[in-house]
Image 1: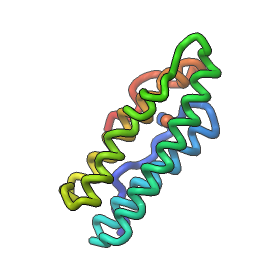
Image 2: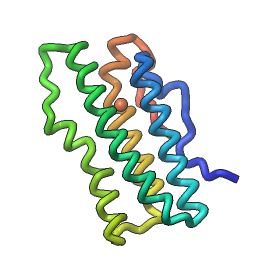
Image 3: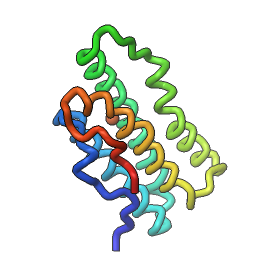
Image 4: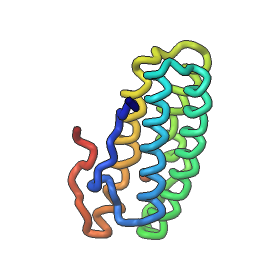
Length: 138
Ligand SMILES: [Fe+2]
């Protein structure tokens, strides 16, 4: 039975198809990592973790462009994007060094997804008059 650590919910949607598809993809990536951890497949975990960090970096760049287009007066600085990525890039580094408790990886990824991805997108969601409450409460 696959290990699902983050179940996609419709209230994650921000109303912009490209970003919503990115978020769905990251949700699937997190679950792939969780499945590999549950199966004890420690060859798959670092590869998928690295792919997740790379995709998240590209997503944050895309999202920054969208936010800037929505609100040109507000500055979305590049260092903010680095800060947003840091928890999972640090997690991948710790994992590759053997310094990360593997059992904590799923929670770290889900927490990051909820705090740095979904919650961050409240600004987009509010612009589209979609659900504006915190979407990731479980
Ligand atoms: Fe996002």
